[in-house]
Length: 334
Image (cartoon, helix red, strand yellow):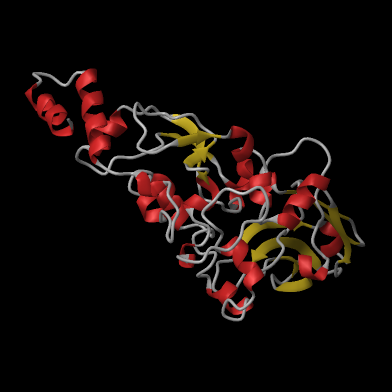
């Protein structure tokens, strides 16, 4: 039947919508996609999903989720993976779960892979309805699950509790860490896949980058108030996020606040250096404020306020704030 259908398409004088649909159905029936939703002694690898979901695969492959297990810092922290409880979230089972997932037995180097979040009772699930004319595998539609913070909180338990404790209206994990994009769910790699993708319509969805906001989005994370007079400077950092800043149950992440002053000769001097980190209980609570009053030397003519996010030594420093304030004539004249 498959070969006859494909042969009949070749004899059509024009590429009608029916012909395109028939060809797509032919291709899908000729190919086996059962392995995408089956789990035996193995499971669908991310590269299999990436053959059709090219954009999503590229985003995921460069995210921390993809390197959750292979990350050398994780390996060192777990004494070469000896701490088995940590593997539950760094190499979770290929199954959508309500609670913290179990660790899988194989292919752990894929980290938090596609099927850890999207394989649900024999279907590949997500928040959106199917956007194409044909579906190569069973699709589950679960907007209640995928738009809720609970799916992230299965592993990010501490941050979820912070989020729950923050009062008022607040953005979800997905809204901050999976920015919106309008595109097709799948992309063509050439050949017959052009036909299948051509029948799909674009939809508003979320990118699978799982990243912290860029430095140019600092206003979405915190607001800064700086007041100064002839005696000193008061600085206040207001965390407007529904979780601590910085946040995270494990690992190394720290905010460093530096105050530097410039004297009348143009030389810059460090005035204070403060580290904000969960491990030291100096982080800024959800919707909370950190304040400090600093005495400024009389000869100072300007004050520089710099806030930077540090992680492991081999990862880039993220500059969140770098602001210079003129202190006024009462300092330069003293």
